[in-house]
Length: 161
Image (tube, rainbow, N blue to C red):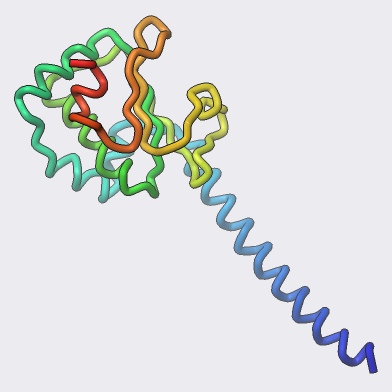
C-alpha cells in the first residue's frame, strides 16, 4: 500500500525537479552570456528602453557646463539592464557626456545581474549595493558617487558643483 502511494508522489516530485532544473539552467546560461559580453555605449543604446531615454532626455545648460569637470577623470557605471533606475539614469549620463562633448579619461559600463554581481568582481571592490551606481575616480581615488538617482542632478552629484 505504501509503495502504491509513494511511487506517484516520487514521480511527481522528480518531474518538478527536472522542470525546475531545466528552467534554471536556461536562465543562468542566458544571464551569463549577457554578463560576459563586452558592453559599449553603442551596444547599450541598442536596447529600446535605454535608447528611448537617451533620445528623450534634454540636459540643461547648467548641467552641460558642470559635467565638463569629468574631463580627465575615470567613470565606472554599474547598472542592470533589467533595472528601471538604470534605464533612466545611465542614458542620461551618456547624453550629458555626448552633448557636452566630454570624454572622460575612461568610461567603463559594468552590467550586473539581479544580485548586483558580475564575473570580474568589481562589484565587491566598489561595494555595490544598488543600481545604478556611478563612481568618479581621479587618479584612482573615488571623488564622487551617485547611487540609484541623483540628489540634485547627475552633473552636480558627479562633480560636486
